[in-house]
Length: 253
Image (cartoon, rainbow, N blue to C red):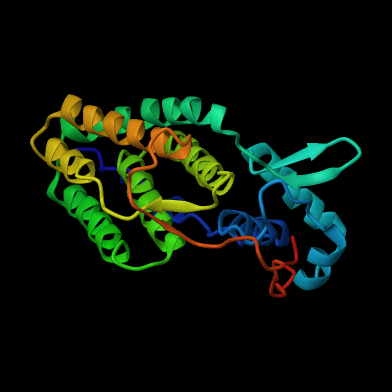
């Protein structure tokens, strides 16, 4: 009988962990500042000031900024340089249409094979949202909402879907920051979160997709000013100049 051959070569199964470059670190810092509202929508990116605070040259800062242009967080305006993107109210409906396409598909996929571990992770996200919604800070509530929807898609296990929803969720935050009446989020937790989880748990993908659709319709109405009856929590953002901590430059080699 021939000697069996191992299916996998152990020496090849170990993938080295890639170190983040200086540009990667700058991207992270800029993205955090944009999504926190520390760099206000429509506002310029002060290359000299930001590079000095980060302790980097303008070259890697510009490369990092171009990545965020590709992500849709920054825009390059001829003669005016780089600015934080603004998403107008008339764009909100299309933004949520794209989100529904991705998230409803994710919900249907999860409902095809509901697993206790995945349901538990969504439950944890909802519990976090419920907890922070009792406070008076809009940003943590918005963060918890984004975390729920990101987890919903990430659980599918598709890198491409996760990348798409990451961009769409960032655009959603910018749309909220672009609202004329300031950054505000819904105070009460919509029952649709519970309906999404329960529908997935019982294998009802269409039910989960319908709950998502209703949740998004309500969000569109609030962001476009069509529904001002719902109680919201507001947080001032962009009132102070953004500050950055120095990062340690990474040798690309």
